[in-house]
Structures are given as C-alpha cells and as structure tokens.
Amino acid sequence: MKKVLLLLSMVALMPSGAGVLAAPAAAAPSLIEQAEAARKEADALGFEWRDTSKLIKSANEALDKGQKEESDKLASLALLQSRAAIAQAKSTAKNWKMMIPK
Amino acid sequence: MKKTIQRRLLTGALVLMTALVTKPAHAVNYQALVDADVKKFQGYFRKEFPDVKFEDYGDGVYALDEDARKQWKEMEEFPPYELDVEAGKALFNKPFANGKSLASCFPNGGAVRGNYPYFDEKRKQVVTLEMAINECRVANGEKPYPGFKGDLAKVSAYMAYISRGQKIDVKVKSAAAYNAYMKGKAFFYGKRGQLNMSCSGCHMEYAGRHLRAEIMSPALGHTTHFPVFRSKWGEIGTLHKRYEGCNDNIGAKPFEEQSEEYRDLEFFQTIMSNGLKFNGPAARK
Image (tube, rainbow over the protein chains, first blue to last red):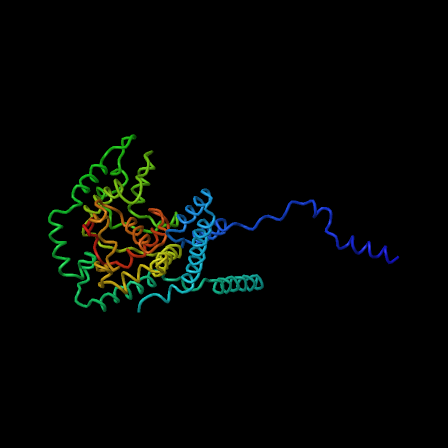
C-alpha cells in the first residue's frame, strides 16, 4: 500500500507529459528588443528623444559584427533614454501648467 | 372640457420644467479663456522689457538688441529672401496640368496670410498656410511640395510678402478649437528632449539673455515673420523647419512638417501674438 501511495505521489509531482514535450519557454526579450519596445512607447507619447533610434541601429550593427558587448552597451543606453523619455512624457502631462512663467 | 384644459396646462408646465432642468449650463466662452491667456502672455513681456514697443516684437530678437537691430536693418536693405519671393510668385501663378494654379485656390491674389492659421470646424483641425498650399496642389492633381523648405517656403514667402501689414487675429470659437489650442499650449510649456527644455524656457524665461553667443528671441512675435531666410540655413525655410531645428537642438525627435503637433503649436503661438502684424518673410542669423 505504502509503495502504491509513494508511486502515486511521485506521478503527481512529475511534470506532465505535455509539459515535458512542449517547446521551451520563450526566451526573454533581448536588450535591443526591450529598447525598441520602450522607444515605440516613447514615440507614441510624442516624447521620443533624438538619438534613440540611432543607438538601436548601432546596437543592431554591432551585433551583426559579433560585438555583443558593444551592442549591449548601446542597447542599454537606448533603453535608458526611452525610459527617461516615457517618464518625461508622464511628468510633463501632469505638471506642464506649473511651468507657465508668472 | 375643463379637465382637458387642465391636462394640457399640466403637460405644458411639465415640458417647460423638463426643458429648464435639462438646459445645458452656460456655454463656455472659449475666446474669453484664450483672451485672458493672451493678456497674461503679452503682459509677461511688457513687464520683462518695459522699453520695447509692442509692435517691435514682430522683429523677433532684433526688438531686444540694438546692435543686432542695426545690422539686421542693413541686411534688410538688400534682403536675401528677395529671389525666393520672386520664385514664389512664379510658382504661385504657374499653371498646373489641369490649367488651374495656386492662384485659383486663394482669394485676394493670394494676399491671405492674415487668414492663417485657423481652426477648420468641419475637419476639426488647424489649417496653416503651408498646409493650404499643398492641399490646393493635391486637389488639382499635383504632388504636394516636400516639407520645411524649397518651393513650399518660396510660395509661402511670396504670399506673406503681399500680405504684409495684415493684423493677427486668430479666434477660438469651439471646444474642438480650444482643444487644439490647449495641445499647442501644452507643447509650448512642456519640457522635452534629452536637455529637458521647453519652448517657454528659452523664449520666455531666457528671452533677451545669451545662450552661448546668441541672444534668445522673445516668443511674442515668433510667428509674424515666417518664412525666414536664415544665414545658418543658407536658404529660406518655414516656421515648422524652425520648430524641427529647436526640437533637434534640445535632443528631442522632431515631428514632421505640418504634423498635428506643429500645427497646434503654431496655432497657439500665433494666438499669443494676436494684435501684431504679419511682416514676413524676414532675414535671420
């Protein structure tokens, strides 16, 4: 009886057959993909910064040349710019009336 | 009979009461809201520069700096935009493939600078002079002029030239127009770009002060004198080209020529200069 219970509990704890056979979980988005998504969001808000697209383009070019470290550096900067632009858009939408000189 | 009369009176009273209850609140006077803004805006410059005459704001930065004004006056004796005005006149009268021309679209021989920008209540958008020029071309089967400079700026310069002296008096008559005005206003005062700067930061708070070697121009009067021939560009360009340059300078991605953002900004800025006269085209550094 004990053996049966042990076997049943092991089966219950095992990953399902479907899960084992399924494709591995999608890879996390690359830095370039993250930067591009954030850039699009900033652009939709009308607040994209001037150089963000160029940085992403350069990151892609560096990756094509096999310069992963350089590519990551550029993509990180583009991501940082886009996040700052999104924050700027939100802050401006909330506070622009306070910026009217008296 | 008596009951019928009583019933009708009661029904009438109910209809009247319903009408009174559901009557909308007093309609918003958008023009009054805008006029109050204009008063504050122009008052700011009167306070900052008490010696500058109101009509001189149409001369941009040359209203503030006497030395630069003298140099500019000399430059205006042989204005660098003269050839562009001539070219614009030729383009204005040049027949399209269908035999019509730009002259067919505009009354008063094209001396209509004072009618633009305006809010088109049917299309619910701001229409600028450059937009109207290109819409005329498209309506007649021609391609629109490419933006910011070139032929578009030349035609606009000619139309501005023959409209000199027309008074700026842009109206805001509806909620939709006020919405466009407010978008332009938010753009003007909102900080953007890598340098986190706004139009008002440079052209209100910093107007008349040096930014490196340049004196910042006052926002009052900004839209009176476009298109301008800038020495820096070496050619004539539209107001939206200047907006593009400003956005680029502060590290923001510029918008397209005649984008909704720039048209709303032009609408707001022109309203702030209500009372001044159109005096374009002009020469600038």
